[in-house]
Each structure stands twice: as C-alpha cells, then as structure tokens.
Image (cartoon, rainbow, N blue to C red; front, side, top):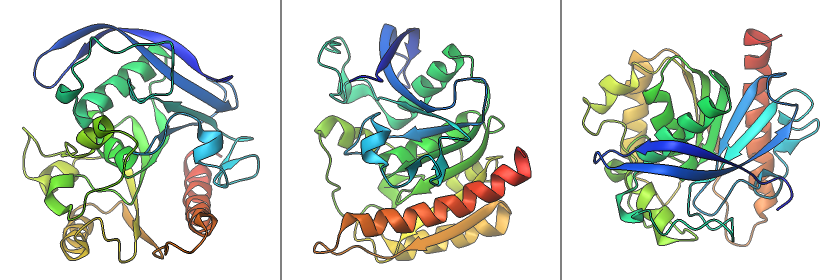
Length: 264
C-alpha cells in the first residue's frame, strides 16, 4: 500500500503487566504535513484498517468534512489487523490484547511521532471505543472525541454480536470498558476534558438503546461538554452512501464549529 508507513515502539506495556518489545506499528498520513495543521486521528473500525481513503470516502477529502486542506489526518493500524503481508505478529498473544492496550499503543505511536495534542479522535464501533479509552488515559491531550455507533463500555449495553473481519478485532471490541480497574463509569467519564460528540444510530440493534439513553442523560447532567447527534438506521437494501452522507454532514458541523473556536 503506497501510503503505509512503519515505526517501531520499543516497549508496549499491557494491562496484565506483560511487556512487549520492539512492536512494529503501521500507519497512514493524509492531508497537510505533520506539524503544520491540527491533527485528526481516525481509529479504524471492526471492518477497517488505516486506509482512510477507502473506509472514510465521502467524509474525508479535500473540501469534505475532514478537510485535507485544513488538517493532518492520521490512522494507526491495530497490530495484526491484516493490512501488512510482510510484518508478522506471531510473538503477540492476541487473546491478551484489550482496547485499553490498543489505546496505550496509539498514544505511544503519537508520542513517537512527536504529537502531544490531538484536535479530534473519531471512530466507529471499535474505533469509537478506543477513542473513549484514549481520552481517559490523557484527558487533557484531546480536544474533541467523536465516537460513532459505539459505547464506553461494550459489555454493559451490547445485545447482539457485531460483524468483524477477524475474531481478534472482535475480542478487542468486547474489552472496551473505561471503568475497568477504575471507578464507576460515570465518575470516570466526568473527568474526560475533551468535548464529547456522540453520534448514535437510531434503532441500532447492536446495543441496548434504552440503557444507553439513560447513561447519556446522566452523563449530560455531569459533563457539560457532551453533545448528541442521531443518524437514521440503514436498511439492508439501502445504499451505504446514504449513511456516509449523514455522517459527513454531522462531522462537518462539529469540526467547523470546533475549528473556529480552537484554531482559527
């Protein structure tokens, strides 16, 4: 893949206290050069990888919501997601890897690239969950998180098995839980300093919508920087493009406002 780049993380500490060494991380950059523009990190989904030109077509591009004329866009691969044919991860016990481990690795990658602050982290399903985890690890280093069809604690509200391109990514998805080994989920969430822009799917069969609405109502009462956006459910016989257009419109609204408030 033409844009695929690689770096090595010397040490990757996992939640279970395992220490992995010399981890190869692949990533792709789009838009303006590093160090010249606000950075948007796109966390890939259960079906995705770092190829944003494919997975985010219609949302990312010149003069799109994620405007490559204004931002530097970075997407990091979860090691072992299948994007590289040359890098082998046989030394990693994939059953040990959690969403928080991935969040730690993504921060280590950002720091290796000399990125200390991120304008926005955006991601759908798995990617959104990792955005929640990243914002908890470094609450002051992310200005905005934009989770799409995702939650900060998968096991709390998941009612249906998601589809994924591998059982490995699905197992990581099931470990999303910002409260694990911390405090109550609302206590943890209220310490996130980022603005939280929740994009949820109306009548999504993957999550318990009633419980989620109750949680978000409570979160909104204690965290004044939370906003909610709804997209319509997409039927099997409808074009995926319709959903992309809905997302593009909402993301454009969010980023334009926050760009003016924080950058311009």
